[in-house]
Image (tube, rainbow, N blue to C red; front, side, top):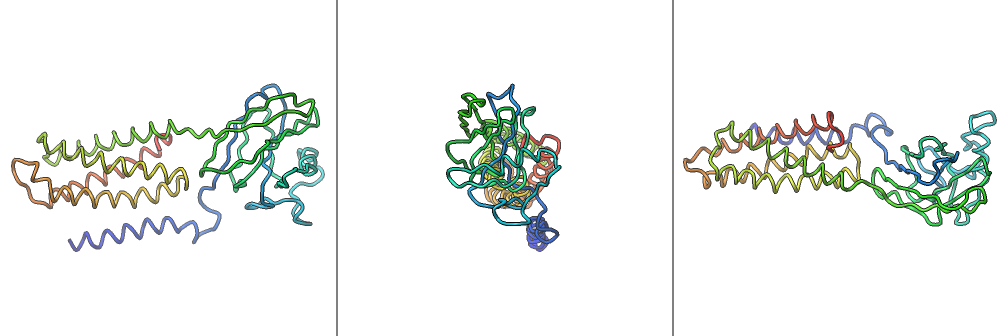
Length: 296
């Protein structure tokens, strides 16, 4: 009991330390939010894309209007002529060009992976026609990694192309990965239960039921955390939430396992089983996150 009381605070401190480590060692460490946009309808076009920001700066990016010294391009730089085109664009709603743009004519994907604007409009420039196309409305960075699918209709050469975007976050893949993680975890913990001698049908049903409830709750929470905070938040809270799951499962097993057993066993056995099972699932989870990132 004394060991357990000492280990639990230690584990919590370690996890919190990992969470705070990026702040202590460098304010710019760790993952950053992103906006990724896939374009449709421009397969045969050469075009550049930027996001116009509602604010005049985000991270290292800022509008030229902030004053001397804020210009990120100079004469002679690659795509300097395109930079001047974007810099000269005046948005009717007062949104700012923050000097970040990409040629998307080959990939048809625009990615702003380092401090993208929170509220933005999508601006497309066609150098062959010296024409712009801008989204009619503004969009939000709705998740830690925000995905959009953009359709461009009309005729860019006449300057009347229309840009419309829809959120394209893959929620179905998130759901499939959640179900897969729950099933794999329950299977692993049932296998460990067999090693601990829990082989009676009622015991296994009880363990499986407890695991189904705790793992669904855990993985739904992790999906929400990953959606809003990214993988670093996922890793930190994964460890912390596993400790909470262990406490819940150990308490239930100690209190109720003998109720579902023909032969009573010491309560410490149920607690040790819960500790081993959750340690194994935590280790397996981190391992799978490295081997199969898509599962998380």
